[in-house]
Amino acid sequence: MYEDFQVTDTWSGESLHCRWTANVVAIATRHADAVDVRFDVNGRSVWMAMPCTAWVEQKKRTGKVITDALAVQIAGRYLKQAIETGYDNGREMYTMTVDEVLGHLDAVLHEAGHTSKLPALIPTEDDAQPLP
Image (cartoon, helix red, strand yellow):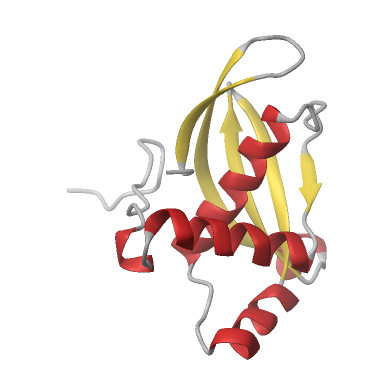
């Protein structure tokens, strides 16, 4: 779905390959109450900052949690939409609101049908691996 996708930039017409590379709890890295989801977009790092309060709101409204895999799909859908609508202007970080997170979450679950149908997150070739 949205962990690895192609999209055409609205302004340049350039084909962009967007690939998820990491989820980082931003509390440790930049002292923010957020989860940052990193994508590689044609060799450029782009981060979607998702507020931790979205996790709380999702639990309150449904009793269910946002998993790492679901967070990737939410952030990827947001990124794809930003590029398609011309909102992407080459910046390195986008900050999502709680309402945006929950809206994209609902859309992703509607598309997938169930969280069990979300694609697995596959490590990239440059991830740390144990020595043989």
